[in-house]
Amino acid sequence: MRSIPQAFQASLDSGATTLCWCWKIIRNDGVVLGFTEHDSDLYFDNLLWSAGVGLNPGIIESAIGFASNTGMATGALTQSGISADDIDRGKYDQAKIEIWRVDWQNTAQRVGIWSGEIGDITRKEHAFEAEITGQARKLNRTFGRVFSKQCDAELGDNHCTKDISSASFTFQANVSQILNVTQFSVASLNAPENDWFSAGTITWIDGQNAGQTARISQYFQSGAEDVFTLAALPVKPIAVGDAMSVAAGCNKSLDHCSGKFSNVLHFRGCPFMPGNDSLIAGPVPSR
Image (tube, rainbow, N blue to C red; front, side, top):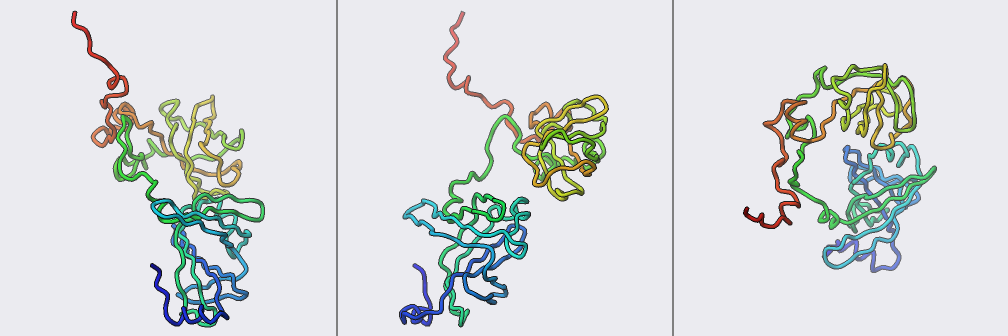
């Protein structure tokens, strides 16, 4: 049960209140933003709560049990509030959100109403729409390991332990030609194999996507050019001359781990796990 301070309750009971709604967003990169529906900015909790920009949450539906509380939030895109560029770069993905009821004449009188996180967020030309969900949504996420024949580590992470920073696995290149929105070519990198970078990653060094990382869905060598296809649309359009760092890819098989990376001791798959055929197989008749 929510605890409401006595002075705050007295303000509610008076019938003539000076209350407003305030919303705090805590992004995963540590940036904290505050917004209010009040007609002027407020300052409390060491945070400036901006008026007239950013966020307008709608009705939040609550349910008994483990069902997740859900709602929608809309707002205008502004440079001082929630910007299109930050949304495109995923800075609001799974950001925490808190909703407060605050006395704007005495901000020490306030009560937390709801907390959750931002789910799916879509952007239009001048506005955005975001799904906001309660804490119960976390119960639908998969935690822990999933056992399969393929490795469940990411190449180069703490589980894989393989150092891919050497010149054998990481190359520098510049875009030489744009083929379509997700496909481009670079001057030949002289990779050891024709699929050396398939399932690898690209980290953009400069250009509009500087600092962003993208997954490579397809790679092949074509004469004096190497052609890359990204698994998803880039945040911003790719341009000729954009510099990037390209890391080799791993298909997560035992053969790749052993032959390509010599890292079989850290392979985290179960290659000899029985498959569905073993589950439905019947007895073999003797001869």
